[in-house]
Length: 600
Image (cartoon, rainbow, N blue to C red; front, side):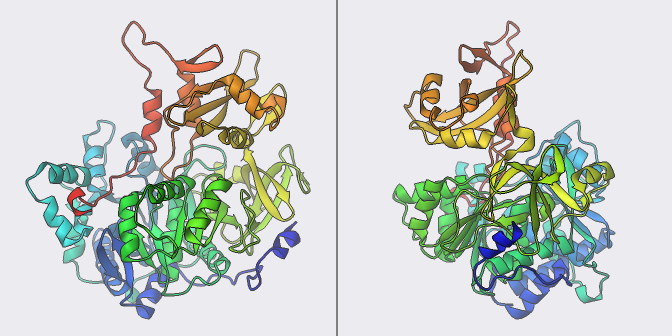
């Protein structure tokens, strides 16, 4: 199958990459030497050149050394996308320490567990996160905390507007900043006043050293930290580099809208962009108006995102926003299936290619991608990257390798694969078998291209049959009146699962179970057709916009089945109401866009 996959490679793309012999810090060092005056970051209108960023990294490295950080130590970052995040990341890796990435909106108890797990003695965190953490009774910490004020990275005009004694400015200040407790110093002040450290005189990392820890549920669903080395991350950078033919050094502009604490955003913005000395238009959270304003300042040539982002951009453009997207020659969509109609609309609006990629945090993260050429095949995972081996095996017997069209578990190996789970040898051992990483995803080969069936742990077993939620979702999503859908299996009294479709409807639409079954009767096997439905205002999504099926199941577990529809339970006599839906939706919340309303 690998030979078939390689046969679809565009001319000029090698099947193997060269071994990596440099570290992450070398990327910024080279970009600063080759393109010192090129804009590295545009953050809501404030620009930073590569030379300026490199000097900031030198100052930040001095601060870290003064905090006692040395090679091999772990430093935790709890930050949204911002220049301070970028600088801290490169300062940590430049002195041979390890970056541990965390979601700044995660619950305090979760962050407490993660900090304990990775063993960080120094934490650089968003000011609002620090304030929230130290207000929580469950949070108790003696680590060195340094607080980041997002306002310090804004243009001077925006900073002045935020100081105005008006309601709008006050509301924006409250969104952006918090009150750090006594004993927590300002990261921004410390860096500003530090002398630059000569990074060439510091003990740095080796290519095989651990560089980054990223939190994940992994292939088994248990929270843990993925251990990515300089070698694995930069191998993936090199793979992506050769895959994106024509991505020119020092000439590209990339939208940095995916969170850096997610492997997709980290690889694209922190590594690939710096490797190509690209300009990043950086946003702390995805906001269409701010993105369009940045696009006018620096026309974007490459956009990496998730399907909801592409849809929101097109919806805004089609609603009358004055924006020209034709500078975007390449786009890549990840994290979830890309609707073919959405892909076609995006390519018509930009005139460029949009392809899908597939990966996982344990693979730094990209394993496959469709070619940026007319040979791309929409709605597939694409082709295994150079130097990446892939096989599809029987879920019940890994010794049995499956052929074209047969659904089985995907196993992979290559230089981008992670070292293991941090301080968790049992989970590490469970993830590998004879050097192969077993992904937990069910896929099939289609003439060298990989096609997703579903997550193995999310597969629904009903009446002895296997049902793949993605297949059911694809069928239901095309139905008139359905805006979005998530399909899950809910347990029944007969020790099997029932296929349930959680629907978000178009405004004014009415859909019942009979409608769904009539629509899908010629598209799905009878056993795969939904047995009941639930109507939700919106689906719970992760930080990158991926529907969280586990959260959907949690919502339904707090509903009751009335006829053929899952509905909210009536409040009990004690007055307690179901809060499952709100809690699940909160997991997808994003940091506020930091540009003041009056400055937009």
